[in-house]
Length: 236
Ligand SMILES: NC(=O)c1ccc[n+]([C@@H]2O[C@H](COP(=O)([O-])OP(=O)(O)OC[C@H]3O[C@@H](n4cnc5c(N)ncnc54)[C@H](OP(=O)(O)O)[C@@H]3O)[C@@H](O)[C@H]2O)c1
Image 1 (cartoon, rainbow, N blue to C red):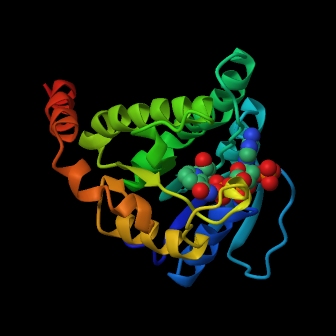
Image 2 (cartoon, rainbow, N blue to C red; image 1 turned 30 degrees about the horizontal axis):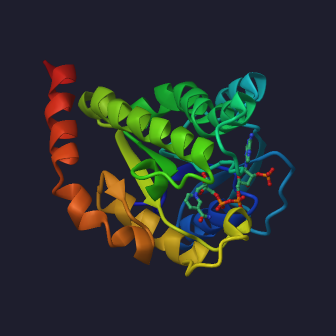
């Protein structure tokens, strides 16, 4: 997979990591970047096409899929995070609506064209999918669920040559992490490592210094070995 000349859709492209991914895709010579946003986006580069896309809105997802006839890379980046203590299930539902069902519905809508192009699906998840941070418990549950979905989808789509990448992001300096007083990577740094990971066919991408410190142990873990073993159940 080489980003140069490719058509890419990024959800939540108006700020933070999504915006950095859009700029990095342009830097790497993408042919077209569809910027999925909830508010119209004006970008000076004519390769950027603004797309009205709330990932919880089935009608908007359908319209977007009707409009885009060819797609090489789908980046499911849109996400929400709220503090909670698991006492109110509506908070969990809000996370799942965007961070899990949003990814599932957008992915399913674009699967036919991604199969045609033998393209890539890139899900921007969190290192907290592997180990929760209790003050944002529902966020962690949604990212863990989305990681599991990513792993199964990877197995389902292997025979059709669609690669499915999990980005296990650590702290990145965006609106979402504003209250956290810890070292954070810049969105630009994370975006470069995410595209490097996609281009190098890495299944699981650890795009910042904090998450990168877990990459080796994850890749040699029993859990990763079991994922590979279980994936064979699909091909059998
Ligand atoms: N920053 C971190 O430390 C960190 C760490 C791990 C993982 N991540 C993940 O990285 C991704 C990007 O987050 P970020 O750090 O860039 O945060 P951010 O600056 O808060 O950006 C979140 C993006 O998601 C969009 N969004 C939220 N709900 C949406 C919906 N229903 N439909 C479409 N777009 C929606 C937002 O659009 P609006 O402007 O319209 O709200 C915004 O563009 C998220 O999936 C997040 O979980 C971030």
